[in-house]
Image (spheres, one colour):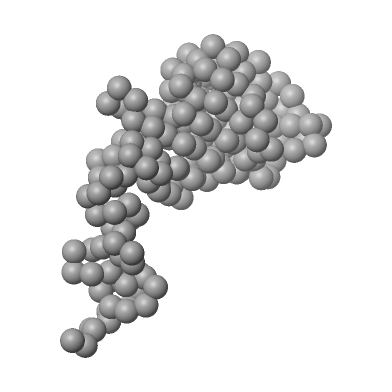
Length: 192
């Protein structure tokens, strides 16, 4: 039977990105990774709940609610861009953010963490890798609105007690702006 190619990835046809009529991709993978319905597959609801973890993190950090950040990362090991462990578990996460992130007169860092380009890939039953980009915008009484840091998050999440939870977060800052109003230290002094 001749194939009727329709071109781009996610469409029936031939080539490395071809999918079958059921949306299964090459090697039986579904259109968004994972075997279609098999062990390790992620549903649309799983993907939505995992992406919501990122949004909840941004909401908590921008509110200056380091306890909520600690709750979100309570099951996680947090690493820097070099793989060094900087915090493990709720109490260490709260202490890390309290020691490094400046809160202003309103109790917040006066930031907006914008998290984009979210990619969720299954990594076995009840586990996924999440890669995303972040841009931190900030404006204070003495700092006009501007980006102060951009970079990437590399997260691992697992289903624990029926809920998706962070189990590892690696923060990879790539470009720094004026961070004096955001952090209690200048990360450029650390060589990273």
